[in-house]
Image (cartoon, rainbow, N blue to C red; front, side, top):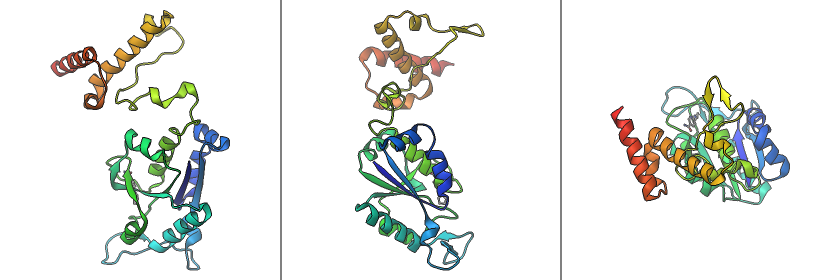
Length: 247
Ligand code: 4GO
């Protein structure tokens, strides 16, 4: 997969994306990420990309033309028409389900807004989808774009090692992850559940599955609606929810 990011702060994005697992994925070629300095597509001598809003009001808006020129340059260079996403509090909230669909695309381009946002006509002309990472407002779209890029990249085959496999984890199957423990076996008087040290793989697997169901019922019962549970697991979840309710 190829991900292009249009931003006024490419160094900020690169600093994050060149580290750790996503950095490794770029080096291995599993994902190709390029951050583009929007200012390079400004057309006046001061390299301005923002202007005051018609009708007045506070703040500045990003002008449509530099963004259009940058996107068109990306299309030309990649011989493609990437799915163009604008990070915005007005978008649909990102979910693991939507990420799964997006990760199947060949290329996406992410626009990071700044100031008060972008000229609406750019959105009409080019943006395929507005995505939000949650119901709060930030000063720029860079952090949301990095969240989207990280979450997308880790779903691409070869980015995570087998032991980091996303298909086993939290939210992928609408269940929260089971609790995990590492050494020491006793920490400040707290013991690791004995079944995890028994070496009995089937019992460990059953314990973890049950813990996932219990924790989801305790912490995020609304997720259970989409979870695939056995009748026995449903009854367990119902009893946990009932016990939580009485507390
Ligand atoms: C996205 C962008 C929040 C989100 C943003 C979000 N704030 N919840 N701010 O995903 C236009 C100028 C939007 C700053 C940007």
